[in-house]
Length: 205
Image 1 (cartoon, rainbow, N blue to C red):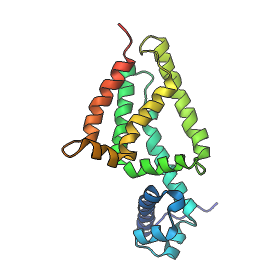
Image 2: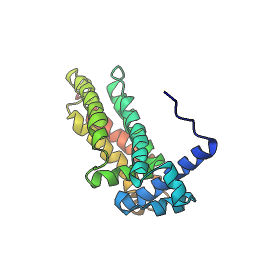
Image 3: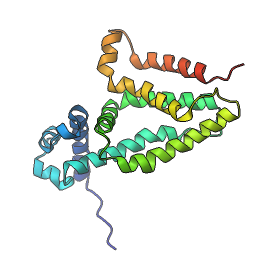
Image 4: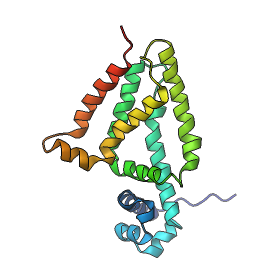
């Protein structure tokens, strides 16, 4: 069987330019509002040239989502069952907050897809996200059973971490408008969320 040819430097550069442009367009307009013409214009490539690399808008979106899910799920994968429970969870909170700070467009891309009913990512949601969340929820449940964490619902704890960290990416304009100038939303959120989750998860006594 013949192996596929490795991409040239120019091909790799063009592919990356398309994905970068698509990320900007999709995060602003959502999948339905985005067009191949918008992506081609932003990537400084012709539409036929774009279609040489990706046969459709769906293919571009799928490539972005695949990369995004890996980045998004890696911090949860790093939750160590052998670690100190509160430290592990706080580290996860911090990593999720850092992702919101460093990858706001990716967060909005994912949020837009979910708000539309996740029509294009049902398979990864069920085959990648759910098993991983169930696995880590079982770890958290074990810590609770051992008296190392205060009793909480493990799945809803994870949902709360997603909600409180990704808010700073998805609603960045609102956050900055409310806080006003002179504030660093992510530094302040780091301090606040660390205190919030430490207090709620520390066992009584």
